[in-house]
Amino acid sequence: MRYGHPVLNRKFADLRHAKDLDPRVLRYDASALPQAVVLIGPRASRKTKGDTVLAEPGFTWALFLFPGRWYAVESIYDRSGSLVAHHVDICRPLEETDGMLSFLDLKLDLLIGADGKASWLDQDEYQAEIDAGTIWPDWQKAVAETAATLDRERACGAFPPEVILSFHP
Image 1 (cartoon, rainbow, N blue to C red):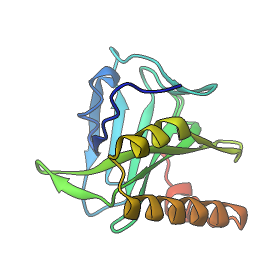
Image 2 (spheres, rainbow, N blue to C red):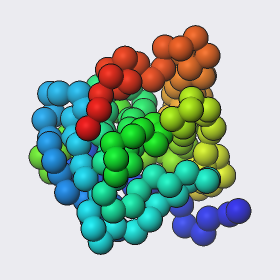
Image 3 (cartoon, rainbow, N blue to C red):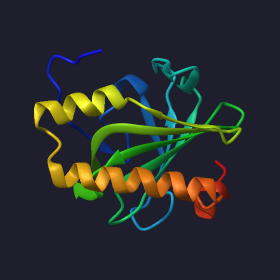
């Protein structure tokens, strides 16, 4: 699938960029992990990746943003508080924008199901961004290194880290 106009988008810890999720911030603390816990509101549109439902009304997202890392993790919980998945955005390292932690999404995603099975998603979108010149060669190198590190850490049980695994909404 080809994308007509690739454009990188900024994502915010409070999910303000995702109006279709009707986000309701339950907690935000830039110095904590997770930095944000957000309830998916009653007017939210259902969001899926592959066969996994990532958002619908009543779901909770915990956002873990790590300084200097080229990824961000959204841990997603269903209405009953059960883990659905860890969604890993490959991105530029976090920064503060308009008073909120944010990051520039580079399109490539890793989805780790509650059962531990993982898959890389949106590789076509990532390639479209490269082809459009929006992801520079030094960023491509950082993305490749990050993906390899995440795969290696997952293989030895070190990813997701304990700070993510021990969180419950």
